[in-house]
Amino acid sequence: MLDVEEVSVSYEKLAESGSKNESLDDKLRAAITDVCAGELGKELNRAAEEEKVKFRRPLAGRQMLRLIYVYFQTKQSLNQVYGLTNLMKVTYLGDKNMEQFYNSWLKVVNNLKSPESVSEEAREELFLKACEQSAVLKNDVDHYKRQAVGHPDKSYDFLLRSMKFRIDSAREDRNLKELDNTFAGSTAMPAMPGAEGMCKFFLKGSCVKGNDCKFSHGGKGKGQSKDNKGDRGNARAPSPGGKGEKGTKATQERVRAPGKGRQETHLL
Image (cartoon, rainbow, N blue to C red; front, top):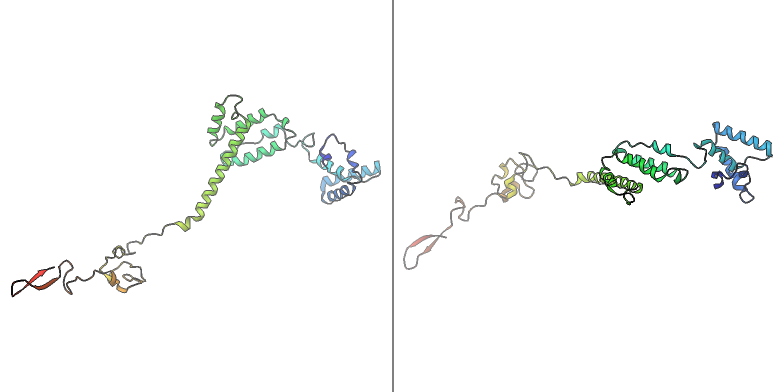
């Protein structure tokens, strides 16, 4: 099958598939006949008629495939799809399109007739011109230019690796940003209550207004908590002196002073 792409193998030679590959060639011919239509189909039909008249044999599948290659080729050589002219047409359209440029460049380079069809020096010069248009690659280009001839970093390979590194780094940053945005909603802090929200004194355990408090104590209504209605548990506790006495007044206790028959009041 690879003989189809070899220029050294003539069109007539492709008609000889050999006994071992005859069945495979018949399947190839049938498959091509089923899918080819339009002008290409007419071209194959004319070639089949000519083969039948000249050699009294059907057009081989490999011959049909060679004709398809010739029909779509862009150069004289069958296996050369792109050349230097095509490489020069790959345009750098800004850093936002860096990855698009990189992929288009490699597509052309990888489909050259041979590595020698476009020299290493020509690739380096063209690629350098593209890199010089990039703000992202400025430091890499400056580093490239500072190196002496023969240095590993003053090469086409260095420029290619530098652009690939910037593309990968930008993709990682985008992925990380998207990940952060995905979880942003679940990690956001709840909003603090407004002026009519949670009672700040209740949070400190010192609210004395109970049911009359206009701020929330965490319950369904203002001044109501889930554990104790009226917030009685959070009001100021009565002083040890009993009802009606202030908390700052010490409890009084009557004791008999020693050596005297009367009682004196001592503050404890």
